[in-house]
Image (cartoon, rainbow, N blue to C red; front, side):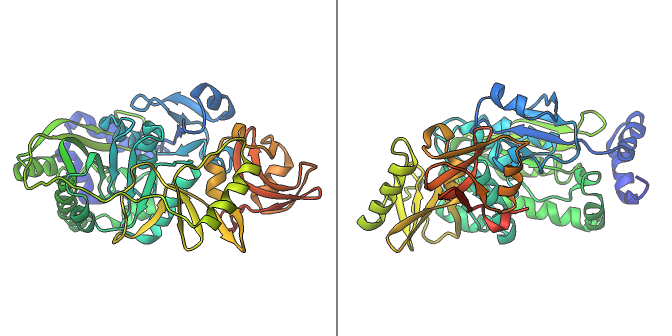
Length: 433
């Protein structure tokens, strides 16, 4: 790659030992590395791995991460079913530093498109509460779609500026990830045209200033004793090591535990920076006592849903029903009252009550397990029915009339409705091929 910015070249020569220059710049003449992370919310590692023939060597810093042996994996029906997330290998290094635990309150402050946030959610195993925030609405929609595809039940997807969230959530979270917007030097191979066109010394400085403000707001939301990870996909010292030095000077309540920088000539990845901090004392912090959002829905809507649930599932599934404008949700346990915050997704959108009848949502299917369902059309990846379903076409099957779940090798893909040997397709139009 001969079109690297001249100033970037000078910066890296100043930053790296001279005996590493050749190896570093030689990286840009090679294709980027691709990675895949298994979604253990869908099944065990031993069950998922044989289904994905493109899994290569394991990634050292993520126990469920693998290098991909092919360039594009999004066409696999198992991607549509949420069995894996395509993620740049070195980007997987930040989330594990937090060591999130089941039952914790976790915030991913700059979450879109969702790689690190869904990585955290998988580690939480559906227990606790994770807030995934993205200030830009169009990106927040993509984040919400990825949360849905991965079948995450305990997430709230918000679209707010950090300063708006910090007022409501002061001292609320056990763990916070800030994968801050950056100058993207680690994207020069992966998204070369866009990353190179946007890079400049002025943009590096602007990113560093913006990162400082985001870090300040994120720190307000962390509990005493809580941990915070700051990460970027850039090599600029002002956004990485320099940002850490300034942060520690301005926040004496924070202690640096470790920081690491992955360079692309030293690891098989595009490069990443991550620093782990702990909040050791209370500084300008108060205990947040957020009002909990209580389950609520009309008797008519609950009756309609329970009738559907009885016909669709083998046992009762949803425990915390919440209705808003005729739409029913299953709330995560302990979720806060979100009034005053722009929210795109809370828990699982179960479906909608229309004219006294319940119609299930795509999200319900992707959060379900086929072994819990009654009426199933199970297809294998090579079956033509899989492609027909993903294109939105009708299917032929003699399964009993009524709502059914469409599966690939036993993993839910979506919803259909069987009527006298024909299955009407309810795969979302925006996702069809």
